[in-house]
Every structure is written in C-alpha cells, then in structure tokens.
Amino acid sequence: MDERILRKTLSDIPLGGLRTFEQTGSTNDVALAWAADGAPDLALVCAEEQTSGRGRGDRRWFTPPGTALAFSLVLRPLPGEEQSVPLFSGLGAMAVCEALGMRGLHPEIKWPNDVLLNHRKVCGVLAEAVWMGEKADSIVLGIGVNVKPEAVPPSDQLNFPATSIEAEMGKSVDRLTLLRDVLQALLYWRGLLTKDVFPNAWGNHLAFRGEQVEIWAEGVPARTGQVEGLERDGSLRLRSHTGQIFTVQFGEVHLRPVL
Image (cartoon, rainbow, N blue to C red; front, side):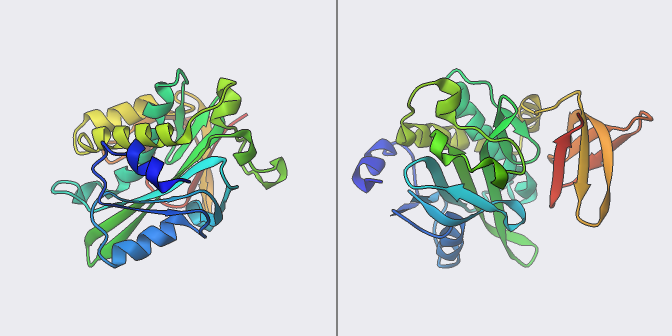
C-alpha cells in the first residue's frame, strides 16, 4: 500500500492521523494501542495483510495481502455519543452499505455487524470500546471488506457463506477509492448517530427482515423469531411464533436464517 497515494486519495477526509502497514497482526490491536497512547479522533490504521485479524468472539478474520480492505478507526465519542456506544457497529456497517450502494450493489446487514451481498458475507465490523470507569474513552472500529475473490477463505474455514465485491460485480474495484467512500459515508452517518433516522436507516438494511431466524449465545437456549426491526438503541426486535415481541441485546450473539 503506497502511503503517498493513500494520503492523496484521502486528502478530503479529516483524519486525526494515519499509520499504514504492509503486514500486521491486527489493525484493531494497533489502533487500541495507539488510542491508549493518545491517538486523536479519526486516527486511521490500514494494512495490506493481517496475520491475526479478529472478528467478534476472537474469531480470525482472513486477510491475504492486497485482496481486501483491512482498517481500524479510532473514534473519541463526541458530545451526545457517549450513550450510543452500541450503535457504532451499525455505523461501520451502514458506511460500507453506502459505499457498496454507490457501486450499484444491494447490500444488507446481518445483525449486528456483518454486511452481506446476495446473502453472503462480504464485510465484518468489530467495534471495541475502551472504558474509563463508566465512560467510553475511545472506540476502535475495525472493518474488513473482501474486495477480491482471493480474500474469501476456503469453504471449510467459513461459518457463514462469503463472497467478494469483485465476484459480485464481475469487474475490478479500486480499493483506495472504496476506502475513501466508506470513510465519507461513515462521517455522514456519524452526524446522524444520535437521531432517530440512524436506527431507522439501519433497520431498512436488515437482512432476513420478515423472515424466521434463530438467535443463540453461549450457554443460552436458542430462540426463534421473525425479524421485525430495530429498537432505538440498536437492539434487534423479533416476534415469536406465539406473537410475542422480544428483543435481543448486543453481545456475543449468533444469528442465522431458519431454512
């Protein structure tokens, strides 16, 4: 990744700093350490390759060199955002959806943090908050996007079907321009994070809306329900087979469609 070209491509983004790597373990780990050392709001970490990228629950995120977007953004909560920490995963997913929509694609969000194309995962988002007592001091928003087909792991390493942008579009995609579009969209939606329009827009992108899904977590019995939408805090709203409405909060929760 040519840092000079990257800086030129992102010249209209008010970054708080930029660090690039040909190879790193995890951009989120680098960003968390930078945040602890005082990184400002919108400090960006990018890597061509991650050797130990992480998804939710410490699952590995596959990032071969030169095939994907792998980046993490340090966000310092602005006034009013302190109570919206659970929405930051949705913020990353919405930004990616906006950038993909600009390319004629029709992305959906598999709650809470995966972006799908044709019901296949193309992007994962990992938001990690650093707390000072009860206050979020910073949020590191990690985003990984499969751009080239080579970014998709072998099928025996997948727990959900995956795809890439280029496989869906049938043509090459400039990764740096895509990164710029994602960041611009993120800035736009961040300005609406505390408004009702944000969860409404996020809800409009929900995958499996109106369909039956199974929700489960470690040590908790699985529940089945029809996806209804989102609550204001980003919790998922479902309807049970008896017609009862129930919500699912954030955490290490798994969702899959009922076939």
